[in-house]
Image (cartoon, rainbow, N blue to C red; front, side, top):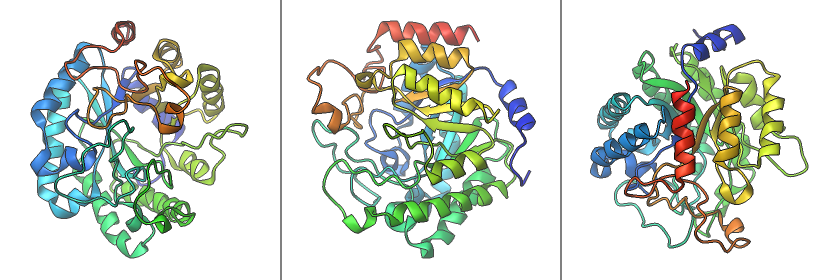
Amino acid sequence: MTEKWTCDQARAWSQRHPWGCGFNYLPRTAVNWTEMWQASTFDLATIDQELGWAREYGYNQLRTNLPHIVWLDDRAGLMDRIDRFLGVAARHGIRVMLTLLDDCAFSGDEPFLGKQKSPLPGLHNSQAAGSPGRARVIDPGCWPDIERYVNDIVSHFADDARVLLWDLYNEPGNRGIFRPGGDSALFDARLEIYALTLMVSAFGWARAQNPSQPLTVGAWHIAPGSAPFDHPVDRVALHLSDVLSYHAYVDTPAQLAILTTLAAFNRPLLCTEWLARHVGCVMTEQLPLFKALRVGAFHWGLVQGKTQTWLPWPDIAMRHSDEALWFHDVLTPHGQPYSQQEMDMVRRLCVAG
């Protein structure tokens, strides 16, 4: 199919799958997705262990990102590693959402191969790297390589039942940076303008490969005092997506308001980023809400690791002194739950189907 799915087609896809409860995934040994996927640091043993823990607690899906820079350097190797990763996930009963592009480059660096920088002590997600990187996003001369990357990955796995769906672009135009570094010119308003065009192009490229899985890009702009997802990038993403997805690190009343707004589209809905305990985005309240409304859920983080995402965002850290409270993530590096109550709830809701 080379056109956007109809509402009926999208709902039929959703009905073929059980309610999805999952997480955004990097292994504890990877500081970013470059480190996760490049040959020298691909750690399948740790991935197998951690996805085994996830299945024990009842999870049935995950979302993970792919790095354009690794594809440029080692296309065949990356394809093989994706296949092996999907095999491990399938063996643990976990369906995979693959994300192709990503503007969340909070390190301030353009992506690079080889040994990645160590996490900065006490800083949330300090070495996050984009895909393809902000410099390439704002340089249309690089887009033919991005087009080949999207076409190659999607066509290769277009009929692979282990792939649940495609997230084409994580947070297009996100100019956030958590520490000084890099060229400030890369983070100006040009990024949003080019990212919007690149996102639209990515839908066309991926749809031309006729994948059996639906396409989506998550709406992600939420500003206090304004309507959620009224940003042009979000409006276009919601218009083009076969099934709708969004990010919301908000308290429960705000989460419910968002869900009410998006229900008007009459399409299957997935919250592909959530869980921020410091701001009232908590599992004990919101996971039952997602289950009751049959909204697929992917909270941020599985195992406490090199991304340091159990630590709050820096602006929140300045306002909170409770160092024992985790922001994201649910398991220790030994597979033990941060909160037994949370994991009991995951298991109970997933077993209920």
